[in-house]
Length: 117
Image 1 (cartoon, rainbow, N blue to C red):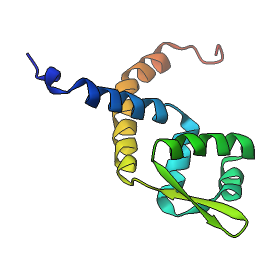
Image 2 (image 1 turned 180 degrees about the vertical axis):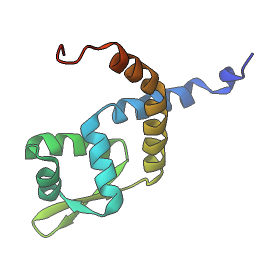
Image 3 (image 1 turned 30 degrees about the vertical axis):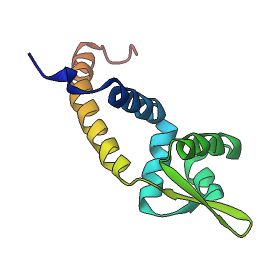
């Protein structure tokens, strides 16, 4: 039997909270963009092609969870990663997700008939 019960309820709760925060393609993209450099909200809006209110809403979630930090730069607010470890977590999740879903994607490709999608 595996030792999966070694995690405390508090540890599992924190893990579930992090998974909920990362459960958004938009938030994943924002975090990856902030890994490169600090960015103002308008930069993120331009890169992501989404509305300012939507990007700001996602930034607020990330800030509330301590994953990004906001700094006022004159009239603008710039965001940066507060915890760079999250980038390693994202990379690991992407790697595992690609491995996990690759067999299903291969099966779908082999069984689909061209032109009937």
